[in-house]
Picture 1 (tube, rainbow, N blue to C red):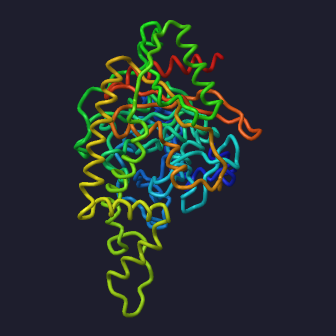
Picture 2: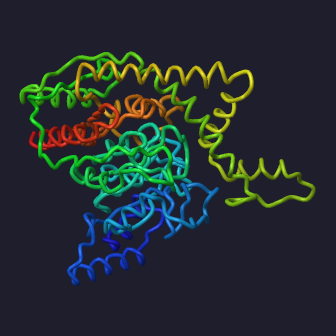
Picture 3: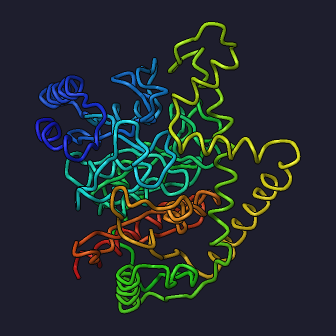
Length: 456
Protein backbone atom coordinates (compact mmCIF):
# COMPACT_ATOMS: atom_id res chain seq x y z
CA UNK A 1 0.00 0.00 0.00
CA UNK A 2 2.93 2.37 0.63
CA UNK A 3 3.78 2.34 -3.09
CA UNK A 4 0.16 3.17 -3.94
CA UNK A 5 0.10 5.98 -1.36
CA UNK A 6 3.30 7.50 -2.74
CA UNK A 7 1.89 7.30 -6.26
CA UNK A 8 -1.55 8.79 -5.50
CA UNK A 9 -0.58 11.35 -2.90
CA UNK A 10 0.90 13.76 -5.43
CA UNK A 11 -2.64 14.27 -6.70
CA UNK A 12 -4.69 14.11 -3.50
CA UNK A 13 -2.21 15.67 -1.03
CA UNK A 14 -3.88 13.58 1.67
CA UNK A 15 -0.60 12.78 3.45
CA UNK A 16 1.93 15.30 4.69
CA UNK A 17 4.39 12.62 5.75
CA UNK A 18 4.52 8.92 4.87
CA UNK A 19 6.04 6.81 7.65
CA UNK A 20 7.27 4.07 5.34
CA UNK A 21 10.14 2.71 7.44
CA UNK A 22 8.23 2.51 10.72
CA UNK A 23 5.18 1.03 8.94
CA UNK A 24 7.31 -1.73 7.43
CA UNK A 25 8.94 -2.37 10.81
CA UNK A 26 5.52 -2.68 12.47
CA UNK A 27 4.28 -5.04 9.76
CA UNK A 28 7.37 -7.21 10.16
CA UNK A 29 6.88 -7.32 13.94
CA UNK A 30 3.27 -8.43 13.50
CA UNK A 31 4.31 -11.16 11.06
CA UNK A 32 6.90 -12.36 13.58
CA UNK A 33 4.34 -12.51 16.38
CA UNK A 34 1.86 -14.37 14.20
CA UNK A 35 4.54 -16.90 13.23
CA UNK A 36 5.28 -17.42 16.93
CA UNK A 37 1.61 -18.07 17.66
CA UNK A 38 1.06 -14.81 19.55
CA UNK A 39 -2.05 -12.65 19.24
CA UNK A 40 -0.84 -9.31 17.84
CA UNK A 41 -4.12 -7.54 18.65
CA UNK A 42 -7.56 -6.83 17.17
CA UNK A 43 -6.21 -4.34 14.61
CA UNK A 44 -3.34 -6.49 13.34
CA UNK A 45 -2.90 -5.96 9.61
CA UNK A 46 -4.92 -2.73 9.58
CA UNK A 47 -3.32 0.27 7.85
CA UNK A 48 -4.21 3.52 9.63
CA UNK A 49 -3.52 7.16 8.82
CA UNK A 50 -3.18 9.76 11.57
CA UNK A 51 -4.35 13.37 11.47
CA UNK A 52 -1.35 15.63 11.92
CA UNK A 53 -2.58 17.24 15.13
CA UNK A 54 -2.03 14.00 17.05
CA UNK A 55 1.40 13.68 18.63
CA UNK A 56 3.59 10.84 17.39
CA UNK A 57 7.22 10.14 18.15
CA UNK A 58 7.56 8.95 14.55
CA UNK A 59 7.72 11.78 12.05
CA UNK A 60 6.58 15.34 12.64
CA UNK A 61 3.46 16.82 14.24
CA UNK A 62 2.77 20.05 12.36
CA UNK A 63 -0.99 20.71 12.56
CA UNK A 64 -0.50 21.69 8.88
CA UNK A 65 1.00 24.98 10.09
CA UNK A 66 4.29 26.75 9.43
CA UNK A 67 4.29 27.43 13.15
CA UNK A 68 5.11 23.76 13.82
CA UNK A 69 6.79 22.90 10.52
CA UNK A 70 9.79 21.17 12.11
CA UNK A 71 8.25 20.03 15.40
CA UNK A 72 8.86 16.46 16.59
CA UNK A 73 6.86 15.25 19.56
CA UNK A 74 8.78 13.60 22.42
CA UNK A 75 5.79 11.38 23.21
CA UNK A 76 2.88 9.55 21.62
CA UNK A 77 -0.73 10.54 22.16
CA UNK A 78 -2.71 8.01 24.20
CA UNK A 79 -4.71 7.01 21.11
CA UNK A 80 -1.46 6.30 19.23
CA UNK A 81 -0.21 4.07 22.04
CA UNK A 82 -3.51 2.17 22.09
CA UNK A 83 -3.51 1.69 18.31
CA UNK A 84 0.03 0.31 18.36
CA UNK A 85 -0.79 -2.01 21.26
CA UNK A 86 -3.76 -3.29 19.24
CA UNK A 87 -1.49 -4.17 16.32
CA UNK A 88 -2.32 -1.33 13.93
CA UNK A 89 0.22 -0.19 11.35
CA UNK A 90 0.47 3.60 11.21
CA UNK A 91 1.36 4.58 7.67
CA UNK A 92 1.46 8.38 7.76
CA UNK A 93 0.35 11.79 9.03
CA UNK A 94 -2.48 13.42 7.09
CA UNK A 95 -2.95 17.01 6.04
CA UNK A 96 -5.72 19.11 7.57
CA UNK A 97 -6.99 22.64 7.94
CA UNK A 98 -4.36 24.55 9.90
CA UNK A 99 -4.75 23.83 13.62
CA UNK A 100 -8.06 22.12 12.70
CA UNK A 101 -9.65 25.48 11.85
CA UNK A 102 -11.65 25.09 8.66
CA UNK A 103 -14.29 23.11 6.80
CA UNK A 104 -12.53 22.40 3.50
CA UNK A 105 -8.85 21.52 4.18
CA UNK A 106 -7.87 24.50 2.05
CA UNK A 107 -6.14 26.32 4.92
CA UNK A 108 -3.39 23.67 5.11
CA UNK A 109 0.04 25.29 4.90
CA UNK A 110 1.12 22.52 2.49
CA UNK A 111 -1.61 23.21 -0.05
CA UNK A 112 -5.24 22.08 -0.35
CA UNK A 113 -6.26 18.46 0.05
CA UNK A 114 -8.34 16.99 -2.79
CA UNK A 115 -11.42 14.80 -2.78
CA UNK A 116 -10.95 11.30 -4.28
CA UNK A 117 -14.43 11.54 -5.82
CA UNK A 118 -13.47 14.67 -7.76
CA UNK A 119 -9.99 16.14 -7.67
CA UNK A 120 -11.39 19.63 -8.21
CA UNK A 121 -13.49 19.26 -5.04
CA UNK A 122 -12.64 19.81 -1.38
CA UNK A 123 -12.63 16.76 0.92
CA UNK A 124 -14.21 18.73 3.77
CA UNK A 125 -12.44 19.69 6.93
CA UNK A 126 -10.70 19.88 9.10
CA UNK A 127 -9.85 16.14 8.91
CA UNK A 128 -9.77 16.31 5.12
CA UNK A 129 -6.54 14.37 4.65
CA UNK A 130 -7.80 11.50 6.78
CA UNK A 131 -11.12 11.38 4.91
CA UNK A 132 -9.43 11.62 1.51
CA UNK A 133 -7.03 8.79 2.39
CA UNK A 134 -9.84 6.47 3.52
CA UNK A 135 -12.12 7.47 0.64
CA UNK A 136 -9.35 6.76 -1.88
CA UNK A 137 -8.45 3.40 -0.33
CA UNK A 138 -5.06 4.71 0.80
CA UNK A 139 -5.76 3.59 4.37
CA UNK A 140 -8.11 1.08 5.93
CA UNK A 141 -9.11 3.73 8.46
CA UNK A 142 -7.81 6.96 9.94
CA UNK A 143 -7.98 9.07 13.06
CA UNK A 144 -9.37 12.58 13.03
CA UNK A 145 -10.44 15.18 15.56
CA UNK A 146 -13.89 16.75 15.70
CA UNK A 147 -14.52 20.15 17.29
CA UNK A 148 -17.63 21.10 15.34
CA UNK A 149 -17.97 18.46 12.64
CA UNK A 150 -14.39 17.96 11.52
CA UNK A 151 -14.67 14.15 11.34
CA UNK A 152 -18.26 13.84 10.16
CA UNK A 153 -18.43 16.52 7.44
CA UNK A 154 -15.32 15.30 5.55
CA UNK A 155 -16.53 11.71 5.94
CA UNK A 156 -19.76 12.75 4.20
CA UNK A 157 -17.89 14.55 1.41
CA UNK A 158 -15.54 11.59 0.81
CA UNK A 159 -18.07 8.77 1.09
CA UNK A 160 -16.86 7.10 4.28
CA UNK A 161 -17.94 6.69 7.91
CA UNK A 162 -16.96 9.33 10.47
CA UNK A 163 -17.67 8.83 14.18
CA UNK A 164 -17.45 11.36 17.03
CA UNK A 165 -18.02 9.70 20.42
CA UNK A 166 -19.34 11.41 23.53
CA UNK A 167 -17.00 14.04 24.96
CA UNK A 168 -14.71 12.22 27.37
CA UNK A 169 -15.03 8.75 25.83
CA UNK A 170 -11.58 8.94 24.18
CA UNK A 171 -8.51 10.52 25.74
CA UNK A 172 -7.37 13.85 24.28
CA UNK A 173 -3.88 13.48 25.73
CA UNK A 174 -1.52 14.23 22.88
CA UNK A 175 -4.12 16.01 20.75
CA UNK A 176 -2.95 19.54 19.97
CA UNK A 177 -5.71 21.60 21.54
CA UNK A 178 -8.12 23.79 19.57
CA UNK A 179 -11.31 24.08 21.64
CA UNK A 180 -10.69 22.00 24.73
CA UNK A 181 -14.34 21.70 25.81
CA UNK A 182 -15.39 20.68 22.29
CA UNK A 183 -12.53 18.56 20.87
CA UNK A 184 -12.97 14.82 20.55
CA UNK A 185 -10.91 12.22 18.69
CA UNK A 186 -12.62 9.60 16.56
CA UNK A 187 -12.22 7.22 13.61
CA UNK A 188 -12.91 7.57 9.92
CA UNK A 189 -13.44 4.18 8.32
CA UNK A 190 -14.91 2.29 5.39
CA UNK A 191 -17.73 0.78 7.45
CA UNK A 192 -19.55 1.24 10.73
CA UNK A 193 -18.14 -2.07 11.93
CA UNK A 194 -14.55 -0.88 11.38
CA UNK A 195 -15.29 2.43 13.13
CA UNK A 196 -16.81 0.57 16.09
CA UNK A 197 -13.78 -1.70 16.43
CA UNK A 198 -11.37 1.25 16.47
CA UNK A 199 -13.58 3.11 18.95
CA UNK A 200 -13.51 0.13 21.31
CA UNK A 201 -9.70 0.06 21.12
CA UNK A 202 -9.35 3.80 21.76
CA UNK A 203 -12.03 4.40 24.38
CA UNK A 204 -11.75 4.34 28.14
CA UNK A 205 -10.35 6.24 31.06
CA UNK A 206 -6.84 7.71 30.87
CA UNK A 207 -4.94 9.03 33.86
CA UNK A 208 -3.35 11.63 31.58
CA UNK A 209 -6.73 13.17 30.73
CA UNK A 210 -8.94 14.10 33.69
CA UNK A 211 -11.94 14.63 31.40
CA UNK A 212 -12.14 10.97 30.35
CA UNK A 213 -15.09 8.98 31.63
CA UNK A 214 -14.66 5.78 33.62
CA UNK A 215 -17.90 4.32 32.25
CA UNK A 216 -17.26 0.94 30.62
CA UNK A 217 -17.00 0.79 26.82
CA UNK A 218 -19.74 -1.62 25.76
CA UNK A 219 -19.16 -3.90 22.75
CA UNK A 220 -21.09 -2.04 20.10
CA UNK A 221 -22.00 -4.60 17.44
CA UNK A 222 -21.62 -7.85 19.35
CA UNK A 223 -25.39 -8.37 19.41
CA UNK A 224 -25.69 -7.96 15.64
CA UNK A 225 -28.16 -5.73 13.75
CA UNK A 226 -30.88 -3.98 15.66
CA UNK A 227 -34.54 -4.63 14.83
CA UNK A 228 -35.84 -1.41 13.22
CA UNK A 229 -39.34 -2.09 14.57
CA UNK A 230 -38.02 -1.42 18.09
CA UNK A 231 -36.75 2.05 17.15
CA UNK A 232 -38.14 5.55 17.42
CA UNK A 233 -36.22 7.66 14.91
CA UNK A 234 -36.48 11.41 15.38
CA UNK A 235 -36.20 13.66 12.32
CA UNK A 236 -35.57 17.32 13.22
CA UNK A 237 -37.75 19.66 11.17
CA UNK A 238 -34.96 22.23 11.21
CA UNK A 239 -32.69 19.80 9.33
CA UNK A 240 -35.15 19.35 6.46
CA UNK A 241 -35.21 22.79 4.88
CA UNK A 242 -34.84 24.32 1.44
CA UNK A 243 -31.22 25.25 2.22
CA UNK A 244 -30.39 21.60 1.55
CA UNK A 245 -29.32 20.48 -1.90
CA UNK A 246 -32.38 18.73 -3.45
CA UNK A 247 -30.42 15.49 -3.75
CA UNK A 248 -29.52 15.59 -0.05
CA UNK A 249 -33.19 15.92 0.87
CA UNK A 250 -34.12 13.09 -1.52
CA UNK A 251 -31.55 10.69 -0.05
CA UNK A 252 -32.68 11.54 3.49
CA UNK A 253 -36.31 10.87 2.56
CA UNK A 254 -35.32 7.53 1.02
CA UNK A 255 -33.60 6.51 4.24
CA UNK A 256 -36.64 7.56 6.27
CA UNK A 257 -38.95 5.55 3.97
CA UNK A 258 -36.72 2.48 4.29
CA UNK A 259 -36.81 2.71 8.08
CA UNK A 260 -40.56 3.25 8.12
CA UNK A 261 -41.12 0.26 5.81
CA UNK A 262 -38.93 -1.84 8.14
CA UNK A 263 -41.21 -1.01 11.05
CA UNK A 264 -39.43 1.90 12.68
CA UNK A 265 -41.50 4.69 14.21
CA UNK A 266 -40.62 8.04 12.66
CA UNK A 267 -41.06 10.97 15.02
CA UNK A 268 -40.99 14.64 13.99
CA UNK A 269 -38.98 16.62 16.53
CA UNK A 270 -38.13 20.27 16.93
CA UNK A 271 -34.60 21.58 17.50
CA UNK A 272 -35.25 25.32 17.29
CA UNK A 273 -31.75 26.10 18.61
CA UNK A 274 -30.18 24.59 15.45
CA UNK A 275 -29.46 27.95 13.87
CA UNK A 276 -27.95 29.31 17.08
CA UNK A 277 -25.31 26.60 17.07
CA UNK A 278 -22.95 28.23 14.56
CA UNK A 279 -22.89 31.59 16.34
CA UNK A 280 -22.51 29.88 19.73
CA UNK A 281 -19.67 27.72 18.42
CA UNK A 282 -17.87 30.69 16.88
CA UNK A 283 -17.72 32.38 20.25
CA UNK A 284 -16.76 29.39 22.41
CA UNK A 285 -14.28 27.71 20.05
CA UNK A 286 -12.25 30.84 19.15
CA UNK A 287 -12.21 31.90 22.80
CA UNK A 288 -10.68 28.57 23.78
CA UNK A 289 -8.38 28.64 20.75
CA UNK A 290 -7.02 32.09 21.59
CA UNK A 291 -6.02 30.74 24.99
CA UNK A 292 -4.62 27.44 23.71
CA UNK A 293 -2.59 29.05 20.92
CA UNK A 294 -1.07 31.74 23.14
CA UNK A 295 1.83 29.34 23.84
CA UNK A 296 3.10 29.64 20.25
CA UNK A 297 5.31 32.67 20.71
CA UNK A 298 8.43 31.57 18.86
CA UNK A 299 10.51 31.59 22.01
CA UNK A 300 9.79 28.26 23.72
CA UNK A 301 9.35 26.22 20.54
CA UNK A 302 7.94 26.48 17.05
CA UNK A 303 8.53 28.99 14.29
CA UNK A 304 10.41 32.19 15.13
CA UNK A 305 10.69 35.21 12.83
CA UNK A 306 14.22 36.43 12.14
CA UNK A 307 15.01 39.08 14.80
CA UNK A 308 15.57 42.63 13.56
CA UNK A 309 18.06 45.10 15.05
CA UNK A 310 16.47 47.18 17.79
CA UNK A 311 13.26 45.12 17.76
CA UNK A 312 11.50 44.65 21.09
CA UNK A 313 10.41 41.24 22.37
CA UNK A 314 6.77 42.24 21.90
CA UNK A 315 7.43 43.15 18.27
CA UNK A 316 9.18 39.82 17.71
CA UNK A 317 6.21 37.97 19.21
CA UNK A 318 3.81 39.82 16.92
CA UNK A 319 5.84 39.16 13.76
CA UNK A 320 6.37 35.51 14.68
CA UNK A 321 2.66 34.89 15.13
CA UNK A 322 1.73 36.89 12.02
CA UNK A 323 4.17 34.92 9.87
CA UNK A 324 3.67 31.52 11.52
CA UNK A 325 -0.13 31.43 11.57
CA UNK A 326 -2.30 31.50 8.45
CA UNK A 327 -5.22 33.91 7.89
CA UNK A 328 -7.97 31.67 9.28
CA UNK A 329 -6.07 30.92 12.48
CA UNK A 330 -5.29 34.62 12.97
CA UNK A 331 -8.95 35.47 12.40
CA UNK A 332 -10.11 33.05 15.08
CA UNK A 333 -7.44 34.13 17.58
CA UNK A 334 -8.53 37.75 17.17
CA UNK A 335 -12.20 36.84 17.50
CA UNK A 336 -11.52 34.75 20.61
CA UNK A 337 -9.41 37.44 22.22
CA UNK A 338 -12.14 40.00 21.54
CA UNK A 339 -14.98 37.98 23.13
CA UNK A 340 -12.87 37.34 26.23
CA UNK A 341 -11.80 40.95 26.68
CA UNK A 342 -13.04 43.27 29.40
CA UNK A 343 -16.43 44.71 28.57
CA UNK A 344 -17.33 41.96 26.09
CA UNK A 345 -16.97 38.77 28.15
CA UNK A 346 -20.53 38.93 29.54
CA UNK A 347 -22.06 40.06 26.26
CA UNK A 348 -20.56 37.25 24.18
CA UNK A 349 -18.70 34.44 25.96
CA UNK A 350 -20.92 34.18 29.05
CA UNK A 351 -24.05 34.39 26.92
CA UNK A 352 -22.76 31.64 24.61
CA UNK A 353 -22.24 29.37 27.59
CA UNK A 354 -25.86 30.02 28.59
CA UNK A 355 -27.03 29.16 25.07
CA UNK A 356 -24.87 26.03 25.22
CA UNK A 357 -26.87 24.89 28.24
CA UNK A 358 -30.13 25.52 26.35
CA UNK A 359 -28.90 23.48 23.39
CA UNK A 360 -28.07 20.58 25.70
CA UNK A 361 -31.51 20.81 27.29
CA UNK A 362 -33.11 20.84 23.83
CA UNK A 363 -31.37 17.58 22.93
CA UNK A 364 -32.48 16.04 26.23
CA UNK A 365 -36.09 16.93 25.40
CA UNK A 366 -35.77 15.50 21.89
CA UNK A 367 -34.32 12.22 23.15
CA UNK A 368 -37.26 11.85 25.54
CA UNK A 369 -39.34 11.33 22.38
CA UNK A 370 -36.96 9.19 20.32
CA UNK A 371 -33.92 6.92 20.48
CA UNK A 372 -31.83 8.43 17.68
CA UNK A 373 -31.91 11.62 15.62
CA UNK A 374 -31.50 11.34 11.84
CA UNK A 375 -30.73 14.10 9.35
CA UNK A 376 -28.21 15.18 6.73
CA UNK A 377 -24.57 15.61 7.70
CA UNK A 378 -24.11 18.69 5.53
CA UNK A 379 -26.56 20.74 3.46
CA UNK A 380 -24.70 19.96 0.21
CA UNK A 381 -22.08 17.69 -1.34
CA UNK A 382 -18.47 18.79 -1.67
CA UNK A 383 -17.90 22.16 -3.30
CA UNK A 384 -15.06 23.08 -5.64
CA UNK A 385 -11.59 24.00 -4.42
CA UNK A 386 -11.23 27.76 -4.58
CA UNK A 387 -14.98 28.27 -4.82
CA UNK A 388 -14.54 31.57 -3.02
CA UNK A 389 -17.18 30.96 -0.37
CA UNK A 390 -17.47 33.85 2.02
CA UNK A 391 -16.60 33.17 5.64
CA UNK A 392 -20.20 32.75 6.81
CA UNK A 393 -21.09 30.37 3.95
CA UNK A 394 -18.02 28.29 4.77
CA UNK A 395 -18.98 28.12 8.44
CA UNK A 396 -22.54 27.06 7.58
CA UNK A 397 -21.27 23.75 6.20
CA UNK A 398 -21.24 22.64 9.84
CA UNK A 399 -24.75 23.83 10.72
CA UNK A 400 -26.01 20.28 11.40
CA UNK A 401 -22.89 19.01 13.18
CA UNK A 402 -21.73 21.71 15.64
CA UNK A 403 -24.49 21.23 18.19
CA UNK A 404 -23.38 17.65 18.91
CA UNK A 405 -20.05 19.06 20.10
CA UNK A 406 -21.71 21.86 22.03
CA UNK A 407 -23.92 19.32 23.83
CA UNK A 408 -21.14 16.71 24.12
CA UNK A 409 -23.23 13.89 22.58
CA UNK A 410 -22.09 11.14 20.20
CA UNK A 411 -22.75 11.44 16.47
CA UNK A 412 -21.85 9.57 13.31
CA UNK A 413 -21.97 10.23 9.58
CA UNK A 414 -22.53 7.28 7.28
CA UNK A 415 -22.62 7.23 3.47
CA UNK A 416 -26.10 8.16 2.32
CA UNK A 417 -25.75 7.60 -1.40
CA UNK A 418 -24.76 10.06 -4.09
CA UNK A 419 -26.18 13.14 -5.79
CA UNK A 420 -25.57 14.97 -9.05
CA UNK A 421 -23.90 18.36 -8.91
CA UNK A 422 -22.55 20.24 -11.94
CA UNK A 423 -22.45 17.03 -13.96
CA UNK A 424 -20.53 15.10 -11.30
CA UNK A 425 -21.70 12.29 -9.02
CA UNK A 426 -20.73 13.06 -5.43
CA UNK A 427 -21.31 11.29 -2.10
CA UNK A 428 -23.39 12.72 0.73
CA UNK A 429 -23.77 11.69 4.36
CA UNK A 430 -26.55 10.79 6.76
CA UNK A 431 -26.05 12.12 10.29
CA UNK A 432 -27.17 10.21 13.39
CA UNK A 433 -27.04 11.54 16.96
CA UNK A 434 -27.70 9.81 20.29
CA UNK A 435 -27.86 10.72 23.99
CA UNK A 436 -24.56 11.06 25.85
CA UNK A 437 -22.80 7.69 26.27
CA UNK A 438 -25.30 6.07 23.91
CA UNK A 439 -22.59 4.89 21.49
CA UNK A 440 -23.68 1.24 21.52
CA UNK A 441 -27.19 1.90 20.24
CA UNK A 442 -25.98 4.66 17.90
CA UNK A 443 -23.51 2.31 16.19
CA UNK A 444 -26.06 -0.51 15.92
CA UNK A 445 -28.62 1.81 14.32
CA UNK A 446 -25.95 3.26 12.01
CA UNK A 447 -24.98 -0.26 10.94
CA UNK A 448 -28.62 -1.09 10.21
CA UNK A 449 -29.16 2.04 8.10
CA UNK A 450 -25.81 1.47 6.38
CA UNK A 451 -27.01 -1.94 5.17
CA UNK A 452 -30.31 -0.43 3.97
CA UNK A 453 -28.54 2.28 1.94
CA UNK A 454 -26.15 -0.24 0.38
CA UNK A 455 -29.03 -2.51 -0.65
CA UNK A 456 -30.85 0.24 -2.52
